[in-house]
Length: 122
Image 1 (tube, rainbow, N blue to C red):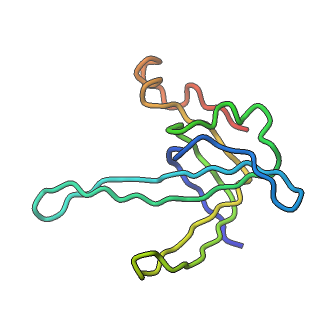
Image 2 (tube, rainbow, N blue to C red):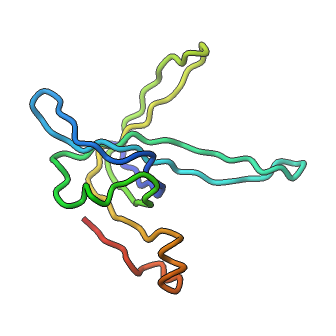
């Protein structure tokens, strides 16, 4: 079984979905970083993960809003698909077993920059 840990930001508000009578929370997480090319130009690299979590999320759903930084750990499933431009893409899906809300940069500035302040494991 493939395990993965991702730190990133939510791409949109989480939603409750139904599939074959089962309810789950669905959201996307973007992991991004910057590098520089040989000319000094900044290049942004971004990887998207489609995440699902069994159940209805309880009180967690109110915090899973677009832009929220999170840590997720779970099982990874990768599948290829045909893109509209004729190329091949890879869909990365995570069945989430653990999620932690992380402090945002804005709250770090207001809270004195502590990396642990505001962590809320669920």
